[in-house]
Length: 180
Image (tube, rainbow, N blue to C red; front, side, top):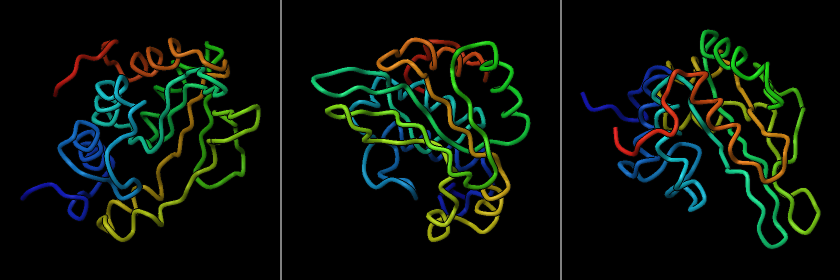
């Protein structure tokens, strides 16, 4: 049987489909219509590997500063207890921020500024309602009982700390080469 959003039954299968979307094999995800944003391009090999390693990503952005914009490197997604333990072990000795929750706590961090005002925020579980229409009930149940993790570099524009730490946490080489 071909793996689809409707047949995926767990985080690993959803992660595989998200990796396929990142690499251009699928046109969209249940949470994002269309291709990944252009700024995601350099992160795609790592994000695809991260999704295949058990951290189902739903948002990411590089650290960047450009003509009135400032971004913090950030990534959010779902994982199980064992993957959360790996992330905690890798991120705790750093100055990087790790938030984890089962339900929406209301905690938010700004990760993009435009002309000095907060523009993009991360944190707080988005829930699983947006997965209901396209995913199997088993996958939605697993998402609903998994951890929602937000990883943020607190330094505006820095893009060389979060990504290698994430790769190390999941025992992935860094940088990750393009391809499967």
